[in-house]
Length: 283
Image 1 (tube, rainbow, N blue to C red):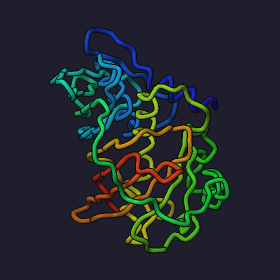
Image 2: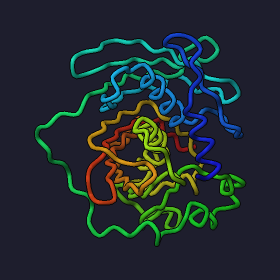
Image 3: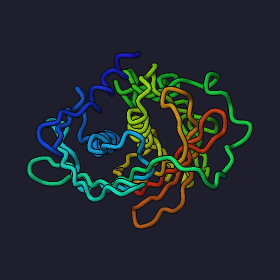
Image 4: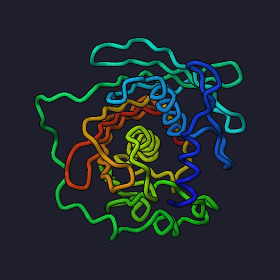
């Protein structure tokens, strides 16, 4: 397991400080605000830690980013055990810093049941991830702009399927395809795999809203921030195996962009659906 992935696992291992109250550490990174995927992943960990039935797994989460998180201090997570039903468990989580909520999440957990089973098909004829540039190789032509960010260890291995605005910055497309996986082997805990994919799902989705306009964060000065994030977990997956993240821009207006994504396992099964709206200002 890579050291960056070790750090991510430690980041997601919250400290229980009281019943229904958890504390999350911050990564040792120079950031202006907390990465949205981090607070979403930690909040899902907090919710999962209060689900007592081991056969119930998260099937949906709905979250709002309320304030920028301060990366210099820990985050406190309070969990409200809203309902424990015969088939479903519901939790609400509020993330707090400096006495104010910065994020809230509602998650639902469900035990597996037999029933209807169909889904969207995975895109055909997608390039093999092992043939595509690594994150560092992809950004090397833009090193002067991204500075030392290019050399930082990354817990998630991402490979962009062409066409890619890193190489064709003015190209206009309706969306993008990205292969992703944890950069190392993970334990079998399904909660950890769900939380890592929650973390990773926020890494590229909002950028998708730039694609139809031919705008790129590599060539334009932008102000971008996640506003809300929704996920539905359909089928089992492993976060340390290649997952194809199909992303599409749905709408952009009033300096807000809405994008959706489908995450497929490498053998073609739809594992997760995602939607996100974010603030986008071209400066």
